[in-house]
Amino acid sequence: MDLITQAPRGTEDVLPADSYKWQYVEQTALAVAQDFGYREIRTPVFEHTPLFLRSVGETTDVVQKEMYTFEDKGGRSITLRPEGTAGAARALLEHGLHNGALPLKAAYITSCYRYEKSQKGRLREFHQFGVECFGAAAPQADAEVITLAHTLLQTLDVKGVTLRINSIGCPTCRAKYHEALKSYFEAQVDDLCETCRDRLSRNPMRILDCKVPSCGAIAEKAPVMLDFLCDDCHNHFEAVKETLTEAGIDYVIDPHIVRGLDYYTRTVFEFVSDEGLTVCGGGRYDGLIEELGGPHLPSLGFGLGLERLLMIMEDRHARFPEPPKCELYLASMGEKAARRCFAIAAKLREGGVAVETDLVGRGLKAQMKYADKLGARYTIVVGDSELENGQAQLKDMQTGETEDILLDDSLYTTLYNKSLDRQLAGMADLFSNVAE
RNA sequence: GUGGACGUAGCUUAGUUGGUUAAAGCGCCAGAUUGUGGCUCUGGAGACCGUGGGUUCGAGUCCCAUCUUCCACCCCA
Image 1 (cartoon, rainbow, N blue to C red):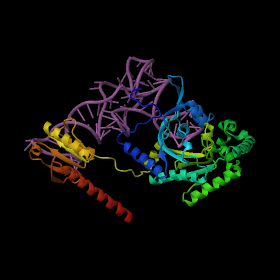
Image 2 (image 1 turned 45 degrees about the vertical axis):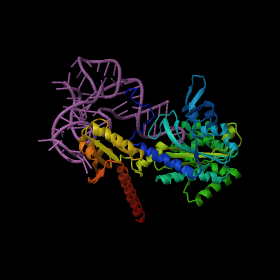
Image 3 (image 1 turned 90 degrees about the horizontal axis):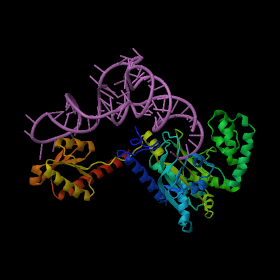
Image 4 (image 1 turned 30 degrees about the horizontal axis):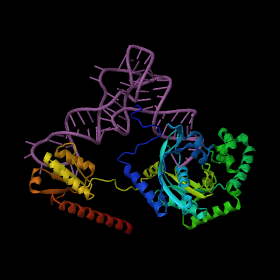
């Protein structure tokens, strides 16, 4: 395989046979967001590099080793967005949206880029559904954002995913915690693994996450951030938990959740699959807008990985809607009939019927086979006799039954009534399911 | 970025200790007499055996490099 016929590492194609699943998930996500009052925002795939340096944080892995950064022809440093929040925050400031009604609630579906060694569920180009709530300091906002993600997962019937929440406090209480944590680990630095010794100076909270058993044992007894929260942060977290509990949303407190982006404050959360994959991650970022030169604007949001979501949905055989199918296939015999079919198809499509007809000059039998492969619900054969008397047979491809129909304007009505019948039958099924 | 595994037709695989024109199933295309799919039968197309080097009289089978995918780590969506 050469460069021309091989997609770059860490990228994926969504093929026609699968795209309906993406459409389903994306449409559902935006619809749920809309129910919560989050309206879609679209921002560029690339931004000025300094935006990410400032927001994501210069010491983070994302910035230090994962960004797709290049110089454009005008000598500007440009970066493909590694996440969605920075762009949304930038757009908010650029357009002065924070001067309008607050909170400002936005949702997006975007591609993101991170130069990593790819694996399953870890791509260099991946897609996120994300949500941002700007200008809402109250714990209800935290609860709402979490609930939104939860509702989406429920709506999509995704099982085996656990909500884990934590609070990493504000800069003030976090500084105190860091000190305590550092002195705790420094006391037993010799027993830590090599990477953890590195982390000690860079980001001691990461040691809590280490999977090396010896480190895990030490981390287990380490001081917990939650014990160091200042009164405000503590009360905020308590209120978030109470709100979630009252709303009936299950969660687990996980003091080890440490997000990889610098801007997070207070509430952080993740939805983790039973396999240990983070499907959705987010939290509060009260200082970000200020950091970017704006006013103090407490805000929060999350990013939800679409590839990962689809992956676990497929692993769990989640229900997807039926893939779109051909309603009617018009099989033709002869050039004259082919042109007639083309015209009939065009007319029916105006009414919203999914119609297909031969494009390759196949014989009748081959056309019928093709119609079968398409999953066409009905077929009509148009040959010389049909052209002459305007009559034809409508064949139901599932039952094989045929009925006489007219090849005129009544055809649309005939099909319309049929699809209506089917819809009613489908609804009857729905109700019978409910009854069970 | 570190360590490891894999790579044969669109898909799933077989290919003996390196030896003549690389197999099969599914899928695809076309036929099985006169205008009709799903079953069956027949035939056909389709593989530079991931790519590039090397060893050898001779490599899909051995060696090196490289690319992709997958696993663990790192990290995260």
